[in-house]
Amino acid sequence: MTIEKDFYHRILADPPAQLLMDGDAVYVGVSGIYKAARIAGDMGLLILGLDGLRADGGHLYLMIDFIVDMSASDDDRPWSVKVHAAVEALRGIEDEWKDGPDFVEFVFLAEDQDPWEYR
Image 1 (cartoon, rainbow, N blue to C red):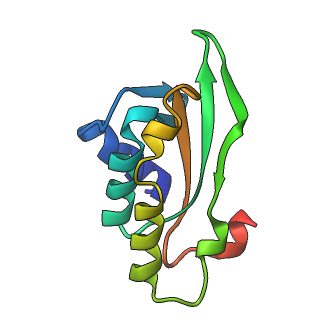
Image 2: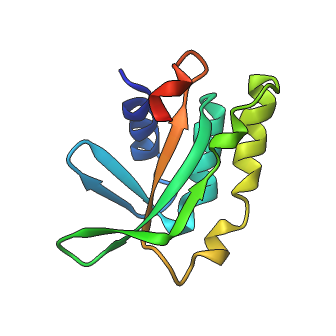
Image 3: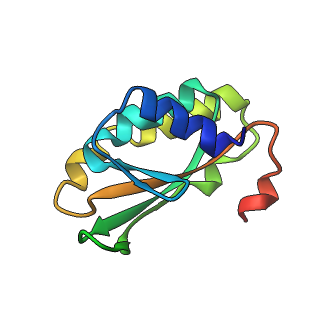
């Protein structure tokens, strides 16, 4: 199972907020960003970023003003420290983004995954 599918499986089992499924992808409602980030952190996944999306009932649109790039968090600190810091960096983002996107897509990296895959 890929890390994305494992993450999706976990958030589907206990949804942190409204979810939107599109093919194999699962998008998290803005109100559940921090809870979903904690799930990813508990799985040992390093969050590299978020993409904010607006849904209009038939389409998803990337909202360019609502993108978080945390790829610099993949530095020389111990893995668990980086994972925790990335999760905590998202604390409160729900309030900041409440009038923006409807959903977010997480971009993350597993400890044993090649970091160049996302660069």
